[in-house]
Amino acid sequence: MAACMGTNPVPPPTTPPLPPVPPQATTAPLGAEAEYKSLLSLFKNLVWISGIGLSVITLAASGLVAIGSYFFWANMRDVRQDAKEQAERVAKDESQKRVTQAFDEKNIQAMILKAAQEKVVRHYAPCFLGPSGRGNACQWQPLPQSFVQGVVQRS
Image (cartoon, rainbow, N blue to C red):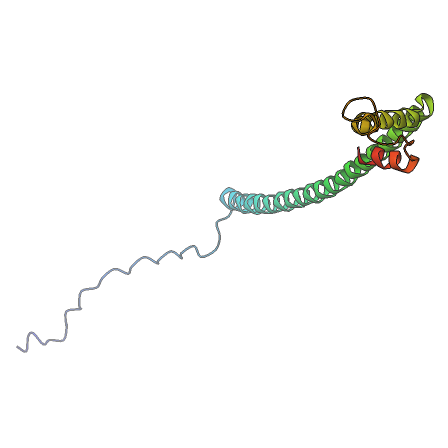
Protein backbone atom coordinates (compact mmCIF):
# COMPACT_ATOMS: atom_id res chain seq x y z
CA MET A 1 0.00 0.00 0.00
CA ALA A 2 2.71 2.08 0.58
CA ALA A 3 3.61 1.69 -2.96
CA CYS A 4 0.32 2.93 -3.92
CA MET A 5 0.68 5.86 -1.82
CA GLY A 6 3.85 6.76 -3.21
CA THR A 7 5.43 9.89 -3.90
CA ASN A 8 4.37 9.96 -7.43
CA PRO A 9 0.75 10.19 -7.28
CA VAL A 10 -1.18 9.66 -10.49
CA PRO A 11 -2.59 12.85 -11.69
CA PRO A 12 -6.29 12.84 -12.17
CA PRO A 13 -7.34 12.60 -15.73
CA THR A 14 -7.64 16.01 -17.33
CA THR A 15 -10.49 17.01 -19.57
CA PRO A 16 -9.84 19.35 -22.42
CA PRO A 17 -11.25 22.85 -21.95
CA LEU A 18 -14.54 23.58 -23.65
CA PRO A 19 -14.51 26.02 -26.53
CA PRO A 20 -15.97 29.44 -25.67
CA VAL A 21 -19.69 29.86 -26.31
CA PRO A 22 -20.35 32.39 -29.07
CA PRO A 23 -22.44 35.34 -27.90
CA GLN A 24 -26.14 35.28 -28.87
CA ALA A 25 -27.37 38.00 -31.26
CA THR A 26 -29.39 40.31 -29.04
CA THR A 27 -29.36 43.31 -31.37
CA ALA A 28 -31.40 43.82 -34.58
CA PRO A 29 -29.99 42.27 -37.69
CA LEU A 30 -27.90 44.54 -39.77
CA GLY A 31 -27.82 45.05 -43.50
CA ALA A 32 -30.49 44.21 -46.08
CA GLU A 33 -32.81 42.38 -43.68
CA ALA A 34 -32.95 45.36 -41.33
CA GLU A 35 -33.67 47.70 -44.24
CA TYR A 36 -36.47 45.38 -45.45
CA LYS A 37 -38.14 45.28 -42.02
CA SER A 38 -37.87 49.04 -41.71
CA LEU A 39 -39.48 49.61 -45.11
CA LEU A 40 -42.22 47.07 -44.36
CA SER A 41 -43.07 48.86 -41.11
CA LEU A 42 -43.11 52.22 -42.90
CA PHE A 43 -45.39 50.83 -45.62
CA LYS A 44 -47.85 49.46 -43.01
CA ASN A 45 -47.99 52.85 -41.34
CA LEU A 46 -48.53 54.64 -44.67
CA VAL A 47 -51.38 52.27 -45.58
CA TRP A 48 -53.09 52.87 -42.22
CA ILE A 49 -52.69 56.64 -42.41
CA SER A 50 -53.88 56.72 -46.04
CA GLY A 51 -56.92 54.58 -45.20
CA ILE A 52 -57.87 56.79 -42.28
CA GLY A 53 -57.40 59.91 -44.43
CA LEU A 54 -59.56 58.53 -47.24
CA SER A 55 -62.25 57.51 -44.75
CA VAL A 56 -62.33 61.00 -43.27
CA ILE A 57 -62.50 62.59 -46.73
CA THR A 58 -65.27 60.19 -47.80
CA LEU A 59 -67.31 60.91 -44.69
CA ALA A 60 -66.87 64.66 -45.11
CA ALA A 61 -67.90 64.50 -48.78
CA SER A 62 -70.95 62.36 -47.93
CA GLY A 63 -71.95 64.82 -45.24
CA LEU A 64 -71.64 67.75 -47.62
CA VAL A 65 -73.71 65.95 -50.25
CA ALA A 66 -76.40 65.15 -47.65
CA ILE A 67 -76.53 68.75 -46.42
CA GLY A 68 -76.59 70.09 -49.98
CA SER A 69 -79.37 67.69 -50.95
CA TYR A 70 -81.49 68.79 -47.99
CA PHE A 71 -81.12 72.49 -48.80
CA PHE A 72 -81.76 71.85 -52.50
CA TRP A 73 -84.94 69.88 -51.68
CA ALA A 74 -86.16 72.58 -49.28
CA ASN A 75 -85.45 75.29 -51.86
CA MET A 76 -87.22 73.36 -54.62
CA ARG A 77 -90.25 72.87 -52.35
CA ASP A 78 -90.44 76.65 -51.89
CA VAL A 79 -90.02 77.22 -55.62
CA ARG A 80 -92.83 74.77 -56.42
CA GLN A 81 -95.12 76.42 -53.87
CA ASP A 82 -94.37 79.89 -55.25
CA ALA A 83 -94.96 78.72 -58.81
CA LYS A 84 -98.29 77.15 -57.80
CA GLU A 85 -99.44 80.32 -56.05
CA GLN A 86 -98.42 82.48 -58.99
CA ALA A 87 -100.21 80.18 -61.45
CA GLU A 88 -103.38 80.29 -59.35
CA ARG A 89 -103.20 84.08 -59.13
CA VAL A 90 -102.69 84.45 -62.89
CA ALA A 91 -105.54 82.02 -63.63
CA LYS A 92 -107.89 83.87 -61.29
CA ASP A 93 -107.00 87.25 -62.80
CA GLU A 94 -107.47 85.94 -66.34
CA SER A 95 -110.82 84.34 -65.54
CA GLN A 96 -112.05 87.54 -63.90
CA LYS A 97 -110.96 89.52 -66.97
CA ARG A 98 -112.74 87.10 -69.30
CA VAL A 99 -115.96 87.14 -67.27
CA THR A 100 -115.94 90.93 -67.12
CA GLN A 101 -115.26 91.10 -70.84
CA ALA A 102 -118.09 88.66 -71.57
CA PHE A 103 -120.54 90.66 -69.45
CA ASP A 104 -119.50 93.86 -71.16
CA GLU A 105 -119.61 92.47 -74.70
CA LYS A 106 -122.79 90.42 -74.65
CA ASN A 107 -124.84 92.25 -72.04
CA ILE A 108 -125.37 89.02 -70.12
CA GLN A 109 -127.23 90.79 -67.32
CA ALA A 110 -130.09 91.72 -69.68
CA MET A 111 -130.20 88.15 -70.99
CA ILE A 112 -130.42 86.76 -67.46
CA LEU A 113 -133.27 89.11 -66.55
CA LYS A 114 -135.15 88.21 -69.73
CA ALA A 115 -134.73 84.48 -69.07
CA ALA A 116 -135.91 84.93 -65.48
CA GLN A 117 -139.00 86.80 -66.60
CA GLU A 118 -139.85 84.08 -69.12
CA LYS A 119 -139.41 81.43 -66.44
CA VAL A 120 -141.66 83.30 -64.02
CA VAL A 121 -144.29 83.85 -66.70
CA ARG A 122 -144.29 80.15 -67.61
CA HIS A 123 -144.59 79.17 -63.99
CA TYR A 124 -147.33 81.59 -63.11
CA ALA A 125 -149.17 81.59 -66.46
CA PRO A 126 -152.00 79.32 -65.23
CA CYS A 127 -152.77 81.87 -62.52
CA PHE A 128 -152.93 84.66 -65.03
CA LEU A 129 -154.92 82.79 -67.64
CA GLY A 130 -157.09 80.76 -65.32
CA PRO A 131 -158.12 77.14 -65.67
CA SER A 132 -160.04 77.78 -68.90
CA GLY A 133 -157.09 79.56 -70.50
CA ARG A 134 -159.06 82.78 -70.92
CA GLY A 135 -158.00 84.73 -67.90
CA ASN A 136 -160.05 86.13 -65.02
CA ALA A 137 -158.36 83.83 -62.49
CA CYS A 138 -155.99 86.56 -61.32
CA GLN A 139 -155.71 90.18 -62.04
CA TRP A 140 -152.81 91.04 -64.25
CA GLN A 141 -150.09 93.03 -62.59
CA PRO A 142 -146.55 93.52 -63.79
CA LEU A 143 -144.02 91.59 -61.73
CA PRO A 144 -141.96 93.74 -59.38
CA GLN A 145 -138.27 93.99 -60.23
CA SER A 146 -137.24 92.76 -56.75
CA PHE A 147 -139.24 89.56 -57.30
CA VAL A 148 -137.50 88.92 -60.62
CA GLN A 149 -134.10 89.57 -59.07
CA GLY A 150 -134.89 87.10 -56.25
CA VAL A 151 -135.81 84.42 -58.78
CA VAL A 152 -132.60 85.07 -60.69
CA GLN A 153 -130.52 84.72 -57.55
CA ARG A 154 -132.19 81.43 -56.56
CA SER A 155 -131.75 79.83 -59.97
